[in-house]
Image (cartoon, rainbow, N blue to C red; front, side):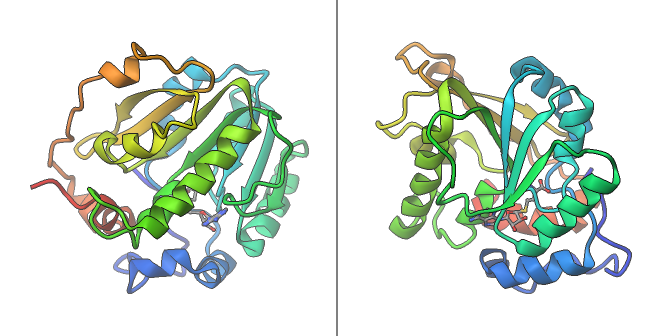
Length: 256
Ligand SMILES: C[S@@+](CC[C@H](N)C(=O)[O-])C[C@H]1O[C@@H](n2cnc3c(N)ncnc32)[C@H](O)[C@@H]1O
């Protein structure tokens, strides 16, 4: 279950009045100035088995939109120590730098950067990972079956950047609310050489752990054949109350 927000936030405050706030950098700066930790989707314990399966300890990892999540610490604790985190929010970056320094994670780099314009050379990371960050680009996308061209352009820019900075056999891990029938058309754009597969985790409403392996695209890759399992609508009371629920139901709409 996602960790609760900072103590200054009341239990019934589950998020901004409009999900469009998630597109506003000022919203994140303001939020991070008073919030120390919030874990979107699920915390590491729910998908650590998948990280261990797909990420080697000596991998160089770029995390997109780290916010105030503990993902980079958990990766580090699991022996994956070459980590660069980015976030668009200067406040998140400064607080994350302080927190990591204070806790002794001195080798983790944290930079202010836009995931739509990644400031890195091509082919410099083994793994790019994001959790709930790409989902932000969908909050105003309209019909999830037919997202607005402006949203598709942004998501494509992000994916092109990720593809560019990955080493020739690097992998992109996307941990998301977004169901395969909505994400596959974007991941499978012809310019990308990656294969696509996914795993699910979580109780009730499932979360998706996408694994895109650069240079491995082929007509018989697992992703193209994998059956699309729609998540069951069996939400825990706690999930219904959470901010994630508001975000998720807007991002992808619940299936009928
Ligand atoms: C939904 S939160 C997810 C935070 C974190 N990944 C987690 O799992 O808890 C989205 C994060 O993405 C950041 N963000 C939004 N747009 C971004 C962009 N264009 N480039 C980099 N970070 C961005 C926000 O500042 C925020 O920290």
